[in-house]
Amino acid sequence: MKRLFGTFGVRRLANQVLTPEFASKLAAAYGSLVKGKVAVGGDPRTSTPMIKHAVIAGLLSSGCDVVDLGMLPTPAVQYAVRNYYDGGVIITASHNPPQYNGIKFVDEDGIGIHDEMEIKIEEMFFNDNPDRVEWNEIGEVTVNERIIEEYQEEVLKRLDLESIKKANLKVVVDCGSGAACFTAPYLFRKLGCDVLSLNCQPDGFFPGRDPEPIKDNLTELIEVVKATGANLGLAHDGDADRTICIDENGEFVLGDKTFALVEKQMLKENNGGLVVTTVATSTAIYDVAEENNGEVIATAVGDLLVARKLKEEDGLFGGEENGGLIFPDFVYGRDAALSAAKIIEIMAKENKPLSELVAELPVYYSEKMKIKCPDDLKKELMDNIAEEISNDPRGYELDTTDGVKIFTEDGWVIIRPSGTEPIFRCFSESDSQDKATEMAQWGISLVEKYLK
Image (cartoon, rainbow, N blue to C red; front, side, top):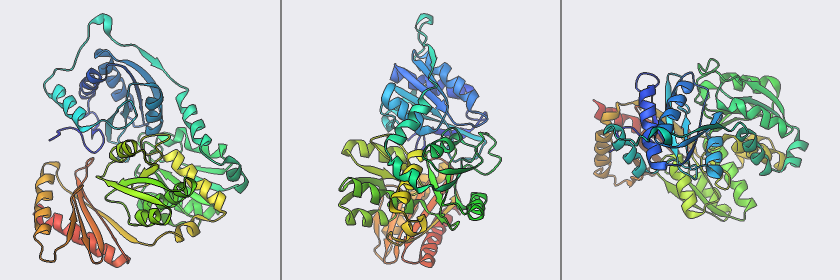
């Protein structure tokens, strides 16, 4: 069992657990396996410069050359690695609060590294035996300040710019003071949009709102969209790999909905194709695929697992229910920039407001809840819940790809431990909001039962 790595990378409290010593040693272990040119970049958290310098030092000590990409979105680092480098390290805690930071390692394709490599890194870390090269073999550091512009140019190449510019859409973008500040406002202006910006000054304290783009954190964005008569509100998380939308009426649009919307367009443009998602994603994804000559494969939760399956199967498109969409011809990971731009393109080409486009999608109701649970209790709780449901006389169908997904006559509910936080997440879906809420509450009650 892994002791450090979660769903994607290592996240801890900055300068308490995730100290410079911790970061340097972890990076040296990764560098011992890569032995090549490694790109490093990160988000604007207050602890990122400290951790980044420690990571660079660790990589150099293992003999790797380092290319410092600066402060930029996670997908921009993944794009750079896939096209130019042997590996990459991203300093970010994504949607976590400001006191956290993290280290994500990616392979030469820009995909999060495999479990086997994570286990090898942990073995070196805990046994104090990363490679340390001789003084004359220590790596060198160079800087690539151009990659962020190239990343944006590549987004633009994948769009119908003429249609978007003709639509003359008014867009409010909320970068949450995160990495999207360096890309989103500029990109949307290049698309010809009238852009209003919120929280678009990078600030590691995240003074405007919490970095997670959930409804409760986007009240200001919702109000600005309504007050200005904007066509669309866009919100990003801390490292700019997720996009959440607010429609022209100020309504929060669930990530499942935008996933299905872009999936529908991608399948139409390509006359079908393979879509990869996770077991926690809406049934709407399957419905849209069936209607548009598509096929769906489901993985455990984690964008790196979706990305890996897309590469293995030569998939067309993928994503998660949290606003993280993956375009594998561009980046093998969630990409907020192309996701947002694609949604703008669909609105422009269809000449319809977002609310109408969403209303045309299959209708399901969902609920998301979470409950705190210490990391060391997660496995025992999950085993207990799985055993109870397996022995339930009602004979529920189960999917244990990730946690426990329970299918009932009313829909489904999935109960799974978070790979990034000391919590259990519970998602449900049904044909009414009341049923979805009731099922999610049932899932939470099962966790509570065994917590006691």
